[in-house]
Image 1 (cartoon, one colour):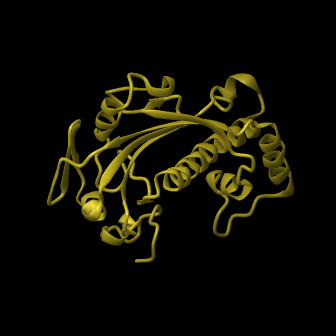
Image 2: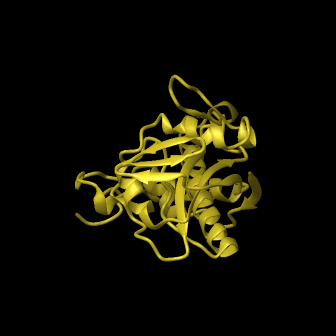
Length: 216
């Protein structure tokens, strides 16, 4: 397992606003924008990440076999058809936004700090993938997390079994499958020398899904 510690120097304020529900016709007022800007300036932007290369042991319709178990996902198996290898990954924040409700009595600030934590870990995932592509010279697909699309949330156990016990200090509950710290994302990516189809939404029939990454 390879681990890194990095910093997002510019947390995306617009994504924070979207995380707060301001998208489409909803528009934040000046007070909310100012609060977002103030909280971003105070955030460290620090995150930690870990990843491990996992060779493909075999493929069949809707399933990829690895030494740690089987990935049951028709959509991911379709994307990974031309993959040379897989990576099991984890990204978490340094906990600045954890317990924000215990550190301040202002409800708006609590909500904003929570949204910043969400965006920070998402930007951390993007930074990790870009770094992996640069360092390995491989093309990677978009991240595929347990509970996303047709990849069952029980896939969490598969990812954690490949990484070190409590990697980066992160643990998960086998009843709820939630991770602690909450601002953590586990995922798998396929990798290869040739450019692959990156977007799993192309193969999904849920055309009205709000998380859809491509037009129907």
